[in-house]
Length: 562
Image (cartoon, rainbow, N blue to C red; front, top):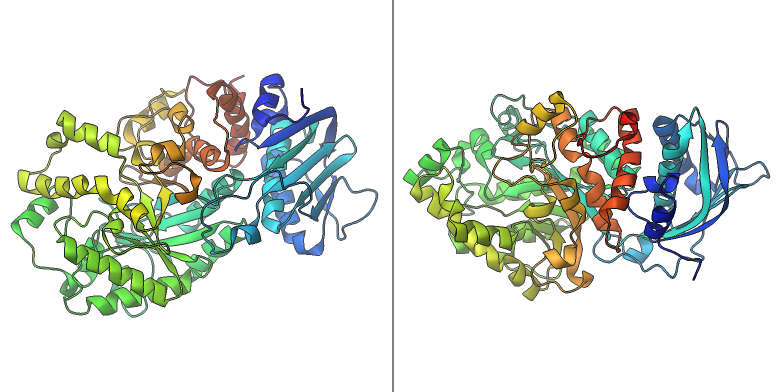
């Protein structure tokens, strides 16, 4: 029997060790005799180019485990406990990630593969790029946190060789319906970083609020950003706020991708600039009364073209690390097909003119997209087909005229992903049946307080989902028309905030689910629930130490319950 085994096999044989803490599951692990003992004052060293990464690692280890490491001023010396180096040696057996990078880098130039060698005498970490080193140190951080007791951690010796399946591993956060300030977004970035997610997609505009400044259209934030859903407080990000978020994310090798959702979802635009709005119709008035605004922008109305150009120029300037701008394109209810396609084509051309590429929700595939675009698949066809076949669509609380408009758009969605593939676009996998994290939790909570929150957050329209549902699926199997990884840009979850009233609600929906999203985006091997739940329980130590709010299903044996 070979001594090279999968980490899944290792965790089956040694579930009591710190190895059970690693999420996402590593590609290969080779166990070795003995343990490495790490405590306060352990010295970490590496080349000057990695010094910032090492200091961040030491800070994170201290926060998560209480163990305080010392970063050396040089990269040599016999007293070093953890030596880090830029070196691709021994990583060739792990394939490069497939898909698309949000920062626009070629896959080989942003190699995230890494090696981690733990021996009784110390640890050696290596990778071809600083990003690969950061991923390795994140794995080591999870080991230390799981094993730490009283400022000391005993970690089993092993060699880990690892790398991601997909290059785009993301989370989309809705900041329009509920505004989340910079500190809340930083906390989300820290969650993403812990699980090796590398994209934060901000849904910056919607009917309920406009969250990013456009200098030539100041009322967008002054008026359109003043409120949120219902009576929730509004707000927006100043250019300084955006810069702070983008920098904080970049330091953790996460790219912030901005979304401006046009031509639908524009009530905040019309509140700020009524001259851009079309005249209301009987159907739009009925939809408005039921909380479903269906007004859309018209390229031939007034200054609409100038508005679109100015908006995307402002966004491109404020989000310089992203090679992509998300143009929305979804749910343009009641808009003629040719007008919708023309609007999406104009948006794509505008974004290209700024030197960026365009992403759109799957309805954008009805325009002239091609190999330079990404289509974000979200309407899962089997669930939608069951809704229509079972008659549940007719149960939605809309007047018949409004339901007809909504159903027309949804029925067309069956052809979106096949059309995108035919036109050469890549698919970003975000099926609402699996990766929409605003779905209610199916498990019961461990406390009455959590059970009350569980009953309140999550869209009741969606059937409740278990944590197990989130890890027992595969992106290829779940995407229509896809037979292998090659046409997939990546995997991205989304959390929508209709039921989210504050930061605690947001974090409650994200954790523990975000760990499962990362597992499926990073790990090529299937995940077995019995092994995963052990790792999930151990990683919750970090959630508690960082003060994150998280859902605690009563069915899982959490460390603090033991």
